[in-house]
Length: 287
Length: 227
Image 1: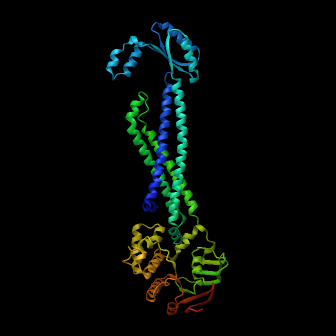
Image 2: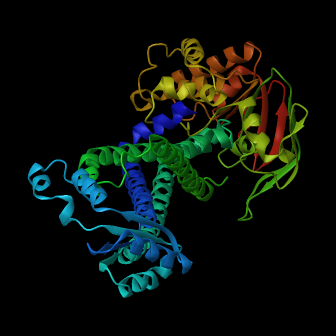
Image 3: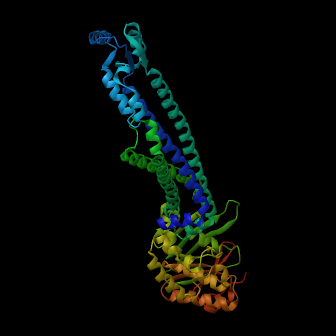
């Protein structure tokens, strides 16, 4: 069976190449969008778990006033977590962030950095209210909150998913049709041979299965190649992406996740290939 | 054993190809089916391998009724009959060796088994040196031998040769008939449809004569009835 399938593929290499190219393209797009979706989800998760409001305190604010402010915020029931970052801690953070730039480290001392309160909200809808409370009390120099970042990321994630879904569906449909057409063409070309084989006593399975197997081969092999290609691109871009993302620990991607992606893609490839060739066989190999 | 019982075959255009045909061919017989073109010789063959169904009547191969056979059992039926088609039905882009090995491929034989058996049959039909050639590179007689070799390779109990001498010169035609006779002497049932009266008359075997789809004679040591 495998020998006959391989013979079919070898005897029409350009058709096989066309089928493989479209499958690789489809699964490359799938891989890219799965990785993008996974990445944006992690990014979103990172920002959601960060302190969402940072209130920089004036130097004159005493510890008692800070404690009072904390109590006031907790009493609203909208703050999930409040962390006080002292001037020294701010300097330590600053040093960690600029450890590669001695010039910047020399210029800054704890005195010029403000102490701050990092506040997380129970839900992101409460952020503006908490920010308003902080802006309203005395001793607060500036209030920053990440609501915009999170909201933008949510929109991006949703857009990536929607665009990805439409593109993936279109490519799956195109590859299904291309494989169906290629297998149908092969059946048409071999019509005479199939007729002779039938007269010589070949069973339906003997005639049909190599065509089915051919479709499955295109699907599975195309998925494997596309996955390899996407992984290579990702590995190639990892150094750049790592420095770009900074402290967001997105990369390197878990190999188990990549293996799961490979498994799912090969499975989907087998499914697309077998459905396409089954439809071609059903249409063109009627007794 | 092949048995045709009251077999009628009428095509959609109204042509009656076979009209109440009755005959029995016992195992190991050598039978000529003779008659002019359009008398129904090929129709008998095509009904036997279930290429189509009779309009009425029954066809038996051994004890099995061919015309009521389930569709899934047709391939197995066809494998029991060695078919040498009038129009050869060879794959012209495959070598003689590849053509002959087709029935073994269908049976799933290994490459080594196939090679041994094909070489054996090539020797039997006198094409030992021609295995690597394509059918187009062969003479008419050699093409016919290839067809017979392919029909015999899976060792069927019956060989049905439809006009195997149709396009051949008398000398080559005789070689083919001798080959068929040789195959029959090895115990196979051989049915040969022909309108070559020289061969039929010389061999003095069983002759079933057809005319317009009807049997006009069935004689043990018959001759070609010229109609």
